[in-house]
Image (cartoon, rainbow, N blue to C red):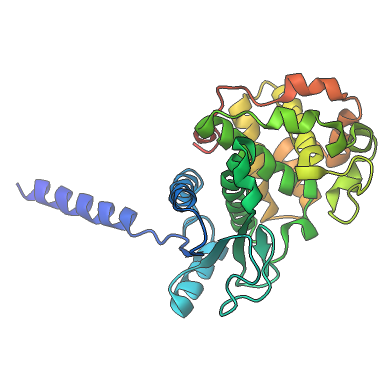
Length: 305
């Protein structure tokens, strides 16, 4: 009987310690001009992505210390501001916010902002974008947490991995939860990006400021998404499953990035240098999109399980 009691005490203690893991806490600042349906869906999406891609004190020591510091100072880790596009929606908190992005990333107190355009509710396609952008921006927080970064991600990492990853992930989510396959159509639009620039001058896509701005502009990060999908395809050639390949690109690289510079992290994660990948990428054609798109059965839970 005594032994059983001891076991029960250990189990209770273990269960309590698991529940007590401190999570990355978001404070929602949602403007009253947002439609009620959008607010409901926003909260649902945040619940899903935080369950699938949790950020908590077990993520790494940098996150653990950041959570403790921010929670001690203000009771939460990061603010999220969302509004239906209007002038200066939160003048008492943040001045002149505009666009959907992470702001103030070169500090310990960045915030996420979601600027939802009224015209985006006029079509079912654009309405889905008002939801998928939530996944996109949350993923940037996830990348930042794994890589222990207090700087803008694309300042110190390849833009095509930063934005291409967020773009592809939001589209996998969109297809899974809304039954809308928008990625293929986006990448097929020639005006959004240049296959020649992507395959022959991929280094241009390492920075926002060098990405092509005129012919072949990387609109909606479609060129970056093509590059990321090509990388996944190259990994699959090494008998790596689709789920494992996406896990390497969307999670493992960022963990390794927290340990080394990005070229080293790239080679350690993928078993080839970025220049070796660029050489392989040079062989790709626009028609190869058919064979590198994520499979229809792929779910975000499969990647981050």
